[in-house]
View 1 (cartoon, one colour):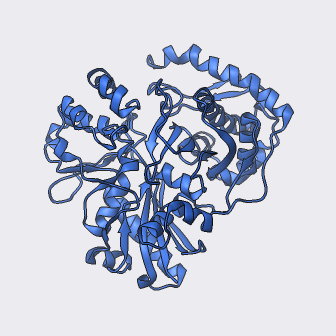
View 2 (tube, rainbow, N blue to C red):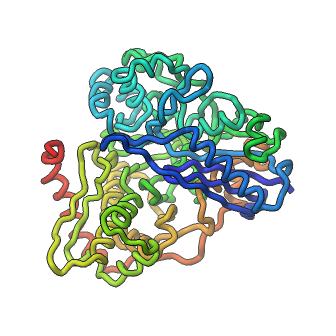
View 3 (cartoon, rainbow, N blue to C red):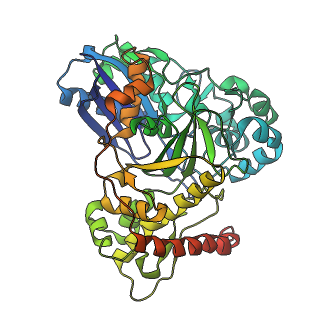
Length: 495
């Protein structure tokens, strides 16, 4: 039997998952790291640290799986999207990676919107945002010209790990489409737009498909990871696409509600559909010739982590915090939270947006604040879901994933606010599973992503159903949530 390795490079950790060709997970090992914020608007990470942590996670997964490295037929990748990794001609990073949470390029976003408006409307079909590769690269050229001049190639975060494994440079369509330098219409770098911004098109690498072979494990990487040089490495995909695949969302009608560090509500598309108002994003799927549409919110489970560590200083587990919050009635007794701690991308494109607790009174406790924080994340995702409805995108079933899929309260809040049953799959590491599936398709073990999902992905039989009285409360709060942002948005930029 052959085995597959999926590497999921996230914002707070990297995970290595080893599974069999029938989907049995033998091992999942992770290594954590932090986001560096040298100033309030910056969000950086070290590519070298990513690699060290990835190599460690692979070694641990191999040891735990009790299989030999030669038995791994293929390696695939899932990775945090949008971020900029810039390498010099020696293959060394010229600066820390500027990741998706970064907000330094607000002025550059305005410049892209002004100079490249025609390309945005006809080719990119998405709005630029701070934290996206194109805007971060433009910021480097304007503010760190000495570093920009050293750049030989730019890539996405997971592309760097694949480069260290194979010494081959490149990227693939799903991640490239979310850089805002890629023509969604023609599925290529939009060189005309890149040049209009005064950037060098030669910095952008060759674009392949997610299931294409990028190379094989090189000798230096084999020594550091314990892998075999006989193992095939495929390009992989952005984490949102891999989450969809790991949840079996390969056809229209199923909705993924993923809450990790960030949060996304997404659907798979058989053809190119996009939001003309550009509140939602459409990206290239990892499934050949497919797309997916998502509301990609910057503020997801990160908000609860912020509350736990930086505000409450509570050492208890997240499960214990959520257990406390379950004792509070839906709606948190009139406490509403705008979750915009890092600005926001969807449904409002507002890098200046900030978090707001509204309705605080003396009756509110720590448990109320915990629950209101969770509810605020879902209220924001519901605003994205309303746009799906306006575009007549089918929504038949919600599948919860990410950290929120592990807790009953998160799922109950989703069911109550969306007024739809919420399901989960039996896998807890959907992005890692999705990346391993891509490795299996690229290695010839599966004929297609769809076939692999039929074999591997299994729904949990238990569903969480909406509670009518809770929906009535949330429906009223949704209107307040929407109006609260509208009434405060003009004040944020003054802070």
